[in-house]
Length: 553
Image 1: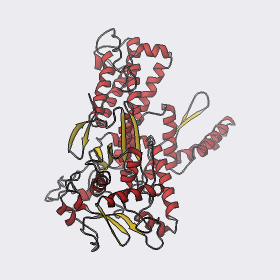
Image 2 (image 1 turned 30 degrees about the horizontal axis):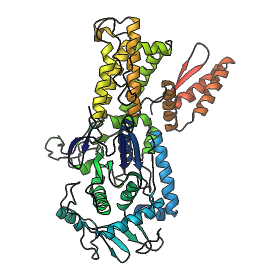
Image 3 (image 1 turned 180 degrees about the vertical axis):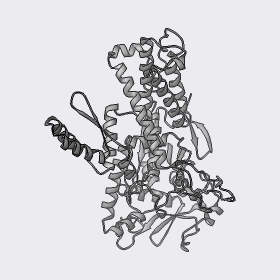
Image 4 (image 1 turned 90 degrees about the vertical axis):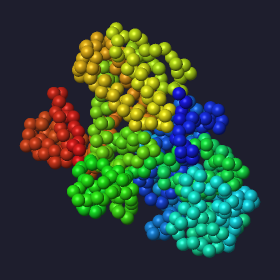
């Protein structure tokens, strides 16, 4: 099955055919680095990380994701803080990279910054002006939207919609209210660079067109970003790029991820409160007696003014980053996600359970050597990882019902990823594999298979499931830690959420151990009470050591 991608431009799924056979060129709009990245950013870049990971298995991928490091928002934020704009932008860009690494996102092949590509941007604008699609007014340069007869084809907006929806004060110097800035004349105290039109800086949209052209060429394969970028950003990118290059397209496939929505505390009309974990969708009625209120998209949006804006770093400091990633992947990238603490905690519990099952499988399989493991399972890996992707089928079991489980799951996982990167279906497949493995590990497989499995078949099945989960995990960016490392990481996150460091707790536990050896039981009890008050759960072992964990805050 060929990869199929939903194309925002055509509003349908299409077979994915790269411009250059065997290569994929992909551009995803990055952040404007003026503030901490939020969970909406995280959702977008996790989604495109999976696209990146899956395509890399079959193609040579060049993934470009930019940083906007000069912008009105950056200038204002720097002025408010009394900080140099370049320093502020660099700091938040570095923070973003750290956040993405914690989320398990692979770095793009190229991460260009606007301020390092001013020459390319100026040259790009010059081409637009030379082709008659741009005009200069008092040091500003504007794109003449009237010169693009196809303007609005990406977003579906008409020229009239654009003019009626303008929210900024109309600049009388422009030929039309819909025209947008390519170059902004310098203002006192703001960063600026020389240009043929005088000192100034780039407009918002032109930067992506120029940097995409430098690294990917005039026409490339995938252009991605959040749904909120379809208009005006991507619509304007498309128009100005076609004008500069003399082409009728910029990217062959336009991909956009859905929003992160937040569950409101209650109905804005009647005040009826939602139950914990209850989800609400735009268009859904309140449901309270005598209340006909229908929730809107505005009721569910994140907003700094509402105080419901979640920096991803703050979320990851309190909750397991891998659980946040799992939470995102449980929903198809084009659909909206409703975020709540209850949903994230549920993802943490499911991730904990999955690592417990992986640890159980590893314990059973550890005594087997590598050769024995390979004999126990036929490795039909996900497409692109081997030249012989149609390798031999799993060995025939002693009785029917188990050998097909891994191979069939592999097939369904590949189909789901080929079908517009449907991670929700992949997550369902991996969840079922984990349930099968758990049945085998707890020796309750008879209810599933109608019989107890002999040890060799049991090992083969677990080895096969473990291999499929490894392969799927590499694409999803999940289960990349050992179970032991995951447990330690989880414990540290929970501990730091309570304001403590592991070394502090280890010191108290060691002091308690010495007190018990010295038979100072009063002191030992006092230390135990201190640890318990900090949320520490102790488990004394027969060998005199103590295992410990942290209660959920």
